[in-house]
Image (cartoon, rainbow, N blue to C red; front, top):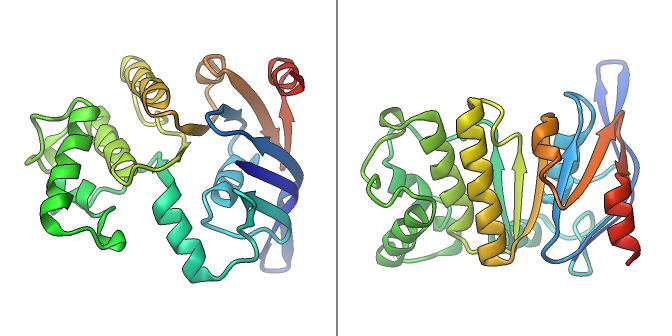
Length: 231
């Protein structure tokens, strides 16, 4: 599904040039569960932005189903992102004035889904993450774990093939972290998603079927992942 070749990303800050990614080569197959562990500033968020079609590399190519995301028009990139990719961030970015269901519905508006279908699909997505009884609650009326579940429902309501998550449990306590990870892993299995997660948490990385590390913009697959890729 994904093929990254020589992906380099540079940012200019005043007179300084920061190289966030350095020649990353990576293949992600359909249905993979790839967990990328690394420190803050190591490059994992930048890498997820490349995979999520949220930014373009300075050099190299990011291919999704044979289409180089670095070369297509902005309109096509937006459409591919809307149709194929669900994204969850540490900061859930829920709209405080909307209910849980309305927040989930916002993901369907760019696809031109009619209001009645939006409501139905949003309600089903909330049920799938265990919030079927909370559609009318505002974010302020939900716990941190419940708000993260709403964000997961919002990412899944489009029925994407890819689910990208950047530090999805970073603001949660240990028990809630494990609940959210269990939910994400269950959804990965249930829907056959390609699942890519970025984290600094080694306990999460140990759960992965395909773990990797990233530091100073360079990614390294663990021995377990290399052995799987060679089969």
